[in-house]
Image 1 (cartoon, rainbow, N blue to C red):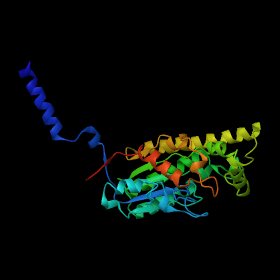
Image 2: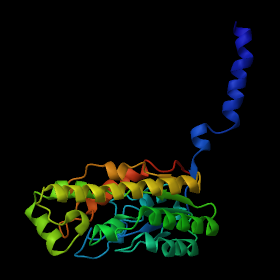
Image 3: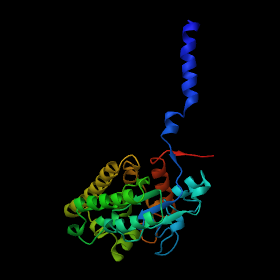
Image 4: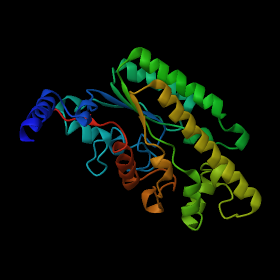
Length: 278
Protein backbone atom coordinates (compact mmCIF):
# COMPACT_ATOMS: atom_id res chain seq x y z
CA UNK A 1 0.00 0.00 0.00
CA UNK A 2 2.82 2.39 0.95
CA UNK A 3 4.63 1.60 -2.31
CA UNK A 4 1.47 2.35 -4.32
CA UNK A 5 0.85 5.64 -2.48
CA UNK A 6 4.40 6.93 -2.84
CA UNK A 7 4.14 8.02 -6.51
CA UNK A 8 0.83 9.74 -5.84
CA UNK A 9 2.25 11.59 -2.85
CA UNK A 10 5.26 12.63 -4.87
CA UNK A 11 3.02 14.02 -7.58
CA UNK A 12 1.08 16.03 -5.03
CA UNK A 13 4.31 17.46 -3.65
CA UNK A 14 5.56 18.39 -7.14
CA UNK A 15 2.25 20.06 -8.09
CA UNK A 16 2.13 21.98 -4.85
CA UNK A 17 5.67 23.22 -5.22
CA UNK A 18 5.42 24.00 -8.94
CA UNK A 19 2.92 26.85 -8.73
CA UNK A 20 0.72 29.04 -6.59
CA UNK A 21 -2.51 27.86 -5.07
CA UNK A 22 -5.71 28.70 -6.97
CA UNK A 23 -6.46 31.51 -4.50
CA UNK A 24 -3.04 33.06 -5.05
CA UNK A 25 -3.21 32.54 -8.81
CA UNK A 26 -6.49 34.49 -8.98
CA UNK A 27 -5.17 37.38 -6.90
CA UNK A 28 -4.54 40.71 -8.59
CA UNK A 29 -1.31 42.69 -8.31
CA UNK A 30 -1.72 45.77 -6.12
CA UNK A 31 -2.48 48.81 -8.31
CA UNK A 32 0.03 51.59 -8.77
CA UNK A 33 -2.49 54.39 -9.37
CA UNK A 34 -6.13 54.51 -8.29
CA UNK A 35 -9.02 56.87 -8.90
CA UNK A 36 -12.44 57.41 -7.36
CA UNK A 37 -15.30 58.29 -9.70
CA UNK A 38 -18.84 59.22 -8.79
CA UNK A 39 -20.75 61.82 -6.81
CA UNK A 40 -20.54 63.55 -3.43
CA UNK A 41 -20.51 60.28 -1.49
CA UNK A 42 -17.08 59.44 -2.88
CA UNK A 43 -15.75 62.96 -2.20
CA UNK A 44 -16.55 62.59 1.51
CA UNK A 45 -18.97 65.50 1.33
CA UNK A 46 -19.96 66.73 4.82
CA UNK A 47 -17.78 64.10 6.47
CA UNK A 48 -15.55 66.66 8.18
CA UNK A 49 -16.83 70.16 7.46
CA UNK A 50 -19.86 72.31 6.75
CA UNK A 51 -21.01 71.60 3.19
CA UNK A 52 -17.57 70.87 1.79
CA UNK A 53 -15.96 67.80 0.32
CA UNK A 54 -13.56 65.93 2.57
CA UNK A 55 -11.62 63.67 0.24
CA UNK A 56 -9.37 62.58 3.11
CA UNK A 57 -12.38 60.66 4.45
CA UNK A 58 -13.49 59.15 1.18
CA UNK A 59 -14.27 55.43 1.43
CA UNK A 60 -12.29 54.97 -1.78
CA UNK A 61 -9.22 57.21 -1.93
CA UNK A 62 -9.14 58.84 1.51
CA UNK A 63 -6.02 58.87 3.68
CA UNK A 64 -7.71 59.38 7.05
CA UNK A 65 -6.83 56.48 9.32
CA UNK A 66 -10.29 56.34 10.88
CA UNK A 67 -11.91 55.48 7.54
CA UNK A 68 -9.44 52.77 6.41
CA UNK A 69 -10.28 53.36 2.77
CA UNK A 70 -9.42 51.17 -0.20
CA UNK A 71 -6.40 53.40 -0.73
CA UNK A 72 -5.04 52.90 2.79
CA UNK A 73 -5.61 49.16 2.70
CA UNK A 74 -3.87 48.82 -0.65
CA UNK A 75 -1.00 51.20 0.09
CA UNK A 76 -0.27 49.16 3.22
CA UNK A 77 0.42 46.24 0.91
CA UNK A 78 2.67 48.08 -1.49
CA UNK A 79 4.48 51.41 -1.37
CA UNK A 80 3.99 51.94 -5.10
CA UNK A 81 0.42 53.21 -4.58
CA UNK A 82 1.26 55.77 -1.92
CA UNK A 83 0.28 59.34 -2.93
CA UNK A 84 -1.22 58.03 -6.17
CA UNK A 85 -4.83 58.35 -5.06
CA UNK A 86 -6.87 60.57 -7.37
CA UNK A 87 -10.42 61.59 -6.62
CA UNK A 88 -12.33 62.70 -9.71
CA UNK A 89 -15.78 62.33 -8.16
CA UNK A 90 -17.86 65.50 -7.98
CA UNK A 91 -20.71 66.62 -5.72
CA UNK A 92 -23.97 66.60 -7.61
CA UNK A 93 -22.64 64.38 -10.39
CA UNK A 94 -25.06 62.09 -12.19
CA UNK A 95 -24.36 59.27 -14.60
CA UNK A 96 -24.16 61.95 -17.32
CA UNK A 97 -20.81 63.08 -15.88
CA UNK A 98 -19.23 59.66 -15.54
CA UNK A 99 -17.63 59.62 -18.99
CA UNK A 100 -15.68 62.82 -18.33
CA UNK A 101 -14.50 61.43 -15.01
CA UNK A 102 -13.31 58.25 -16.74
CA UNK A 103 -11.31 60.34 -19.18
CA UNK A 104 -9.55 61.98 -16.24
CA UNK A 105 -8.80 58.56 -14.77
CA UNK A 106 -7.36 57.40 -18.10
CA UNK A 107 -5.21 60.54 -18.34
CA UNK A 108 -3.92 59.77 -14.83
CA UNK A 109 -3.20 56.18 -15.94
CA UNK A 110 -5.25 54.75 -13.09
CA UNK A 111 -5.12 50.97 -13.06
CA UNK A 112 -7.73 50.69 -10.29
CA UNK A 113 -10.98 52.65 -10.47
CA UNK A 114 -13.91 52.73 -8.06
CA UNK A 115 -17.34 53.90 -9.17
CA UNK A 116 -20.33 54.86 -7.05
CA UNK A 117 -22.88 56.90 -8.95
CA UNK A 118 -26.64 57.09 -9.34
CA UNK A 119 -28.07 58.61 -6.17
CA UNK A 120 -28.28 61.98 -7.90
CA UNK A 121 -29.98 60.38 -10.90
CA UNK A 122 -32.84 59.52 -8.53
CA UNK A 123 -32.62 62.49 -6.14
CA UNK A 124 -34.27 65.11 -8.35
CA UNK A 125 -37.25 67.42 -7.96
CA UNK A 126 -39.82 65.13 -9.57
CA UNK A 127 -40.12 61.47 -10.44
CA UNK A 128 -40.44 62.27 -14.13
CA UNK A 129 -37.01 63.94 -13.99
CA UNK A 130 -35.26 60.78 -12.77
CA UNK A 131 -32.78 59.34 -15.25
CA UNK A 132 -34.37 56.50 -17.25
CA UNK A 133 -32.78 53.13 -16.50
CA UNK A 134 -31.87 52.58 -20.16
CA UNK A 135 -30.07 55.93 -20.21
CA UNK A 136 -28.20 55.09 -17.02
CA UNK A 137 -27.07 51.77 -18.49
CA UNK A 138 -26.01 53.38 -21.77
CA UNK A 139 -23.92 55.94 -19.92
CA UNK A 140 -22.33 53.25 -17.75
CA UNK A 141 -21.47 51.16 -20.82
CA UNK A 142 -19.97 54.16 -22.60
CA UNK A 143 -17.84 55.06 -19.59
CA UNK A 144 -16.54 51.52 -19.14
CA UNK A 145 -15.81 51.22 -22.86
CA UNK A 146 -13.76 54.42 -22.67
CA UNK A 147 -11.85 53.05 -19.70
CA UNK A 148 -11.16 49.76 -21.45
CA UNK A 149 -9.91 51.58 -24.54
CA UNK A 150 -7.61 53.86 -22.56
CA UNK A 151 -6.49 51.47 -19.81
CA UNK A 152 -7.19 47.93 -21.06
CA UNK A 153 -5.93 46.25 -17.89
CA UNK A 154 -7.58 48.55 -15.38
CA UNK A 155 -9.48 46.89 -12.55
CA UNK A 156 -12.90 48.39 -11.81
CA UNK A 157 -14.99 48.20 -8.67
CA UNK A 158 -18.62 49.36 -8.75
CA UNK A 159 -20.36 49.99 -5.44
CA UNK A 160 -24.14 49.82 -5.23
CA UNK A 161 -26.18 52.95 -4.56
CA UNK A 162 -27.41 53.13 -0.95
CA UNK A 163 -31.07 52.47 -0.20
CA UNK A 164 -32.60 55.95 -0.10
CA UNK A 165 -35.81 54.65 1.45
CA UNK A 166 -33.78 53.27 4.34
CA UNK A 167 -32.62 56.84 4.96
CA UNK A 168 -36.23 58.01 5.15
CA UNK A 169 -37.12 55.13 7.47
CA UNK A 170 -34.38 55.89 10.01
CA UNK A 171 -34.74 59.67 9.79
CA UNK A 172 -38.45 60.38 9.49
CA UNK A 173 -38.90 60.22 13.28
CA UNK A 174 -36.09 62.73 13.84
CA UNK A 175 -37.25 66.39 13.83
CA UNK A 176 -33.81 67.69 12.85
CA UNK A 177 -33.56 65.32 9.91
CA UNK A 178 -37.01 66.28 8.69
CA UNK A 179 -36.14 69.97 9.00
CA UNK A 180 -32.91 69.66 7.03
CA UNK A 181 -34.58 67.59 4.32
CA UNK A 182 -37.41 70.07 3.95
CA UNK A 183 -35.50 73.35 4.14
CA UNK A 184 -32.60 72.03 2.07
CA UNK A 185 -34.85 70.27 -0.44
CA UNK A 186 -32.72 67.17 0.01
CA UNK A 187 -33.60 64.35 -2.41
CA UNK A 188 -37.21 65.52 -2.90
CA UNK A 189 -38.31 62.43 -4.79
CA UNK A 190 -37.71 60.33 -1.69
CA UNK A 191 -37.62 62.73 1.26
CA UNK A 192 -40.36 65.28 0.60
CA UNK A 193 -43.32 65.18 3.01
CA UNK A 194 -41.18 63.10 5.37
CA UNK A 195 -43.85 62.76 8.09
CA UNK A 196 -46.51 61.54 5.70
CA UNK A 197 -47.40 57.86 5.57
CA UNK A 198 -50.23 58.38 3.15
CA UNK A 199 -50.58 55.84 0.39
CA UNK A 200 -49.53 58.28 -2.33
CA UNK A 201 -46.31 59.16 -0.52
CA UNK A 202 -45.52 55.54 0.30
CA UNK A 203 -46.05 54.56 -3.33
CA UNK A 204 -43.82 57.43 -4.49
CA UNK A 205 -41.04 56.27 -2.19
CA UNK A 206 -41.46 52.69 -3.39
CA UNK A 207 -41.11 53.81 -7.01
CA UNK A 208 -37.94 55.79 -6.28
CA UNK A 209 -36.49 52.83 -4.42
CA UNK A 210 -37.34 50.58 -7.37
CA UNK A 211 -35.51 52.99 -9.68
CA UNK A 212 -32.39 52.84 -7.50
CA UNK A 213 -32.58 49.05 -7.50
CA UNK A 214 -32.85 49.13 -11.30
CA UNK A 215 -29.77 51.36 -11.50
CA UNK A 216 -27.85 48.90 -9.34
CA UNK A 217 -28.92 46.02 -11.57
CA UNK A 218 -27.91 47.94 -14.69
CA UNK A 219 -24.51 48.75 -13.19
CA UNK A 220 -23.95 45.09 -12.28
CA UNK A 221 -24.84 44.03 -15.82
CA UNK A 222 -22.48 46.63 -17.28
CA UNK A 223 -19.76 45.34 -14.97
CA UNK A 224 -20.35 41.76 -16.11
CA UNK A 225 -20.13 42.90 -19.73
CA UNK A 226 -16.81 44.62 -18.97
CA UNK A 227 -15.35 41.26 -18.05
CA UNK A 228 -13.27 39.69 -15.27
CA UNK A 229 -11.52 42.97 -14.48
CA UNK A 230 -14.71 44.35 -12.96
CA UNK A 231 -16.26 43.58 -9.59
CA UNK A 232 -19.34 44.81 -7.74
CA UNK A 233 -20.29 44.69 -4.07
CA UNK A 234 -23.23 42.41 -4.97
CA UNK A 235 -25.66 44.89 -3.45
CA UNK A 236 -23.91 45.09 -0.06
CA UNK A 237 -24.08 48.88 0.25
CA UNK A 238 -27.73 48.95 -0.79
CA UNK A 239 -28.61 46.21 1.69
CA UNK A 240 -26.62 47.55 4.64
CA UNK A 241 -28.90 48.61 7.51
CA UNK A 242 -27.25 51.91 8.36
CA UNK A 243 -28.56 54.25 11.06
CA UNK A 244 -28.50 58.00 11.63
CA UNK A 245 -25.21 57.44 13.49
CA UNK A 246 -23.65 56.87 10.06
CA UNK A 247 -25.05 60.07 8.52
CA UNK A 248 -23.75 63.64 8.67
CA UNK A 249 -25.66 65.84 11.09
CA UNK A 250 -25.12 68.76 8.71
CA UNK A 251 -27.59 67.44 6.15
CA UNK A 252 -28.83 64.03 7.37
CA UNK A 253 -28.05 62.65 3.93
CA UNK A 254 -24.34 62.10 3.28
CA UNK A 255 -22.26 59.51 5.16
CA UNK A 256 -20.20 60.91 8.02
CA UNK A 257 -16.77 59.51 8.90
CA UNK A 258 -18.36 56.39 10.43
CA UNK A 259 -20.54 55.98 7.36
CA UNK A 260 -17.51 56.26 5.09
CA UNK A 261 -15.74 53.63 7.19
CA UNK A 262 -18.70 51.29 6.77
CA UNK A 263 -18.66 51.90 3.01
CA UNK A 264 -14.97 51.01 2.90
CA UNK A 265 -15.50 47.83 4.90
CA UNK A 266 -18.53 46.64 2.97
CA UNK A 267 -16.95 47.23 -0.42
CA UNK A 268 -13.31 46.26 0.03
CA UNK A 269 -13.99 42.74 1.24
CA UNK A 270 -16.29 42.09 -1.71
CA UNK A 271 -13.90 43.36 -4.33
CA UNK A 272 -10.71 41.90 -5.73
CA UNK A 273 -8.33 39.53 -4.03
CA UNK A 274 -5.07 41.44 -3.98
CA UNK A 275 -1.63 39.87 -4.07
CA UNK A 276 0.44 41.40 -1.29
CA UNK A 277 4.01 41.67 -2.70
CA UNK A 278 5.65 41.74 0.72
